[in-house]
Image (cartoon, rainbow, N blue to C red; front, side):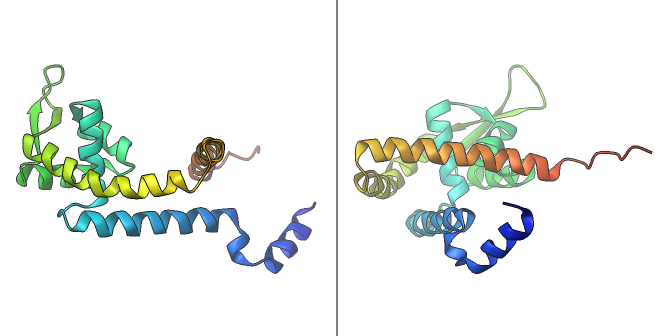
Length: 166
């Protein structure tokens, strides 16, 4: 199908048929749910993710946490400062690099994560129960494939344009 025909078909189809729209709607519903649950614990989604990642991975630098949480290093720096003030994490100088701070969970951070997780897991279980085991596995694989394409396309979209031959 040529581009003009594809454009005509796209303009006639309901927007909710677009895969990107469906992914976005799912993401918005997920974020709205998590934010509502986490608000009761005084946490943002990023703070919760930091606690979760640190509980699973151990100490990490701000740059590592930023990559894990999908935020900029500048945003993560602010998040970590706030979490340190709340005594949810502690930061210590890395034994390997003097300019790098390693964040770890405090006992208070672990306790808050444990309480919040008890509510967050309810949605995970409900989603898992909505699918058969084979559907769940297929959905996970399909979402992983979609994420890979989205990342590749984002890199392609942000790459500098090629120089035209003169």
